[in-house]
Length: 407
Picture 1 (cartoon, rainbow, N blue to C red):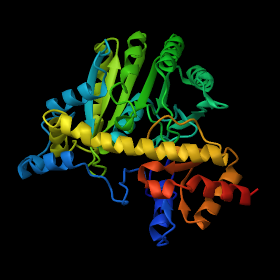
Picture 2 (picture 1 turned 180 degrees about the horizontal axis):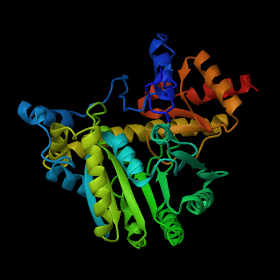
Picture 3 (picture 1 turned 45 degrees about the vertical axis):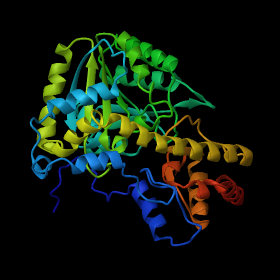
């Protein structure tokens, strides 16, 4: 007897991150390198829970933590704090609104499923966080992927091709980018590249509505946090037929991964164009997660307000640690002759291997060497966010040895 809806994929979920992480957790060898984790860990391997964040959270009353939010779309102070946090000092000259969500994932989910009807196509990166595709599949949407790089350089050529293909088919285009600090490559677009992308969206929007969902989950660990959101000034040039949606994650920003809180921040030329989408996403919030956690929203306001200086200083120590880890790995990878996607900043560095069979065999060979990574489309992701410097040292050479063994 089949009780599920007809258009449903009922195969068991096989999340590559959780599968790889389970293998690493079971390996008790001193040599084991767990590069599967997408959370920040210190040099002793402990999960980082920023002291400023959780000291502040401990000061919030139990009743405030236990309470519902004051509004389905989020507490007003939180919504304002998120907008101030994710935009540059010189704000985009655009209408905007904010809808609180249960994590950045829910922000992406709400945006995708509010912008597209069943059977329509979502445009996502070919090498990307696998949950984008899962969100599409579980909502009977199709996906079209684009390559981010032409050789060693970032390119918009494949995004252009995807946008025109989808617009011709459904007279609407919804594009996902994960920038800055792309998961899994660690690439961040330049201001000039963003200007080119805005120009492309304007161009395609002459044929129908064009929406861009910018997943900024890892942005707060950019190596240049003072200017990390400056690219949004380029959004001032969007046409009336373009919408920008930012998916923000408190999980990464506050190192509170299990305390699910985030927000979707919507931008358009005219506020009237945002109202229908805001109404729909508010209903979606009510029907799926009912409301974001009140205590976490209150804590975000406190941390980014009265505790801001102490929080930024503490967070910077881990940004500096990420920089040291990435610099060491990149230097040794260059010496070893590893082929990587262009990395600029963030939690992850990815080995470039577009042959799926060879990629799988390399992944297996690494596990035999007690090195645990995550298979992604077009390569193997290494979570430097969770690997201490002592285990990064020499890691590139071991990976190269594994590569040579499968030739």
